[in-house]
Length: 261
Ligand code: UDP
Ligand code: MG
Image (cartoon, rainbow, N blue to C red):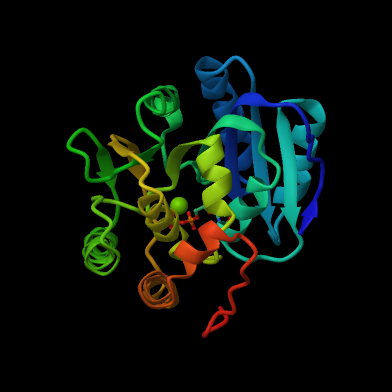
């Protein structure tokens, strides 16, 4: 992992983390829009973009934005490891009292970011839920079906009582974000489930909020399979090894995955 220009030290009211893999076409607009909404939500903020080993020009574009704008921090992983891994890298650098993680592909409307941050006065975490009655959710029908099915399996296997773990827009109090990300091991597909499973272990209060989201892409067969493989790994660590429970008490444990993906 290569941090390109992390500005450590000090603190800010809000850190916005954007994992980005091959988002060269949209990242400039995404960062500009997030600077706008972040400045309305907090007096001091930083936008931390993590280029997750992109093969397009994402890294060059993000570095040039960071050079021109002091509020933007560019981090980079030299290889593509997955969204969970990118967010984990950011967790070692973010300085915010509140942290928002949002996808960098323009599918999610960030207008409600200020409300999400305000909700952190009453809750520890605020997650976007596609199934909130006030949400607007457009996606191919097959993707919607898979999303509902995955949520049912997540609820059954982990005991997480939330209607949607997967939407890429989540706000957390900074101290919880850093503590949770420290014990996360899923790099790619089901890392959101892992975050919420650990939050549940910590007894944190989670709010589900409306979101506007328009997705056009389908899941690949490989992605669907690995989502469930990742989920099985989480359930195994949670229920059998009690790995999160032990790791929260003693954060030095190393996890060696049974299936290294
Ligand atoms: N992403 C990443 N690494 C990856 C795949 C995706 O950092 O290996 C980023 C991606 O750029 C986007 C976010 O994670 O900002 C969500 O990815 P994607 O849109 O592919 O997921 P989906 O919306 O289909 O759940
Ligand atoms: Mg997306």
